[in-house]
Image (cartoon, rainbow, N blue to C red; front, side, top):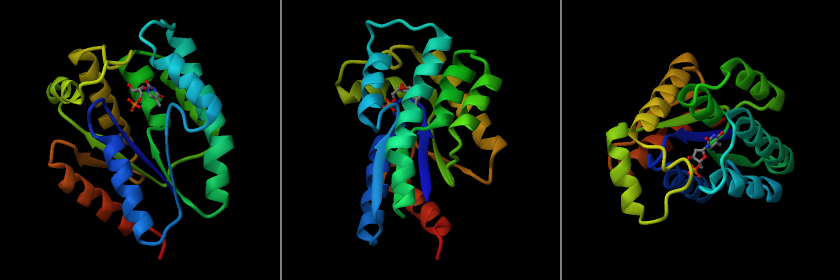
Length: 202
Ligand code: TMP
């Protein structure tokens, strides 16, 4: 089973992906916990280029870099894990490109949909962590780490990303489940667990 976690900055995806993987492992499942951009050696190098505040990218180049990293990640890590019967929990996937480069940055959504189809792998379940954009700056500040290229983009951008994810979830309700990321961490984790457990094959 291929499960993705999506959402804007500061929504808690990385923490929740870890909680979910821990829970599934404790229930006896073999889990690959991975992330995008990244998740394979070459893709992690592309990640460093994408997040570096000193790099500027044209939108088509940025979009294609995300897909180049994704293609590598899918072929080298995700497909082999699924073929071995493992559950794959992935922190971001193709919906992030549609939300960030498509909806928020105004990129060509038809082209992003085509590239997503070319990747040829669709999550069985996508948990969309939904957080009010006004809550994002405080969450990022609480991390106390230097802001990457995307985290520097500000409140208007975060609101467009959120709208993008909500539109994606509304358009594909069979795959996407919206989770209120403003709830306490343990409550978010419990909702994610319940959703995943209800979808696991018996
Ligand atoms: P992270 O902070 O969740 O690790 O993700 C890194 C950043 O990359 C985040 O700000 C969102 C951005 N991103 C895109 O803009 N498009 C994509 O396709 C992906 C996977 C991430």
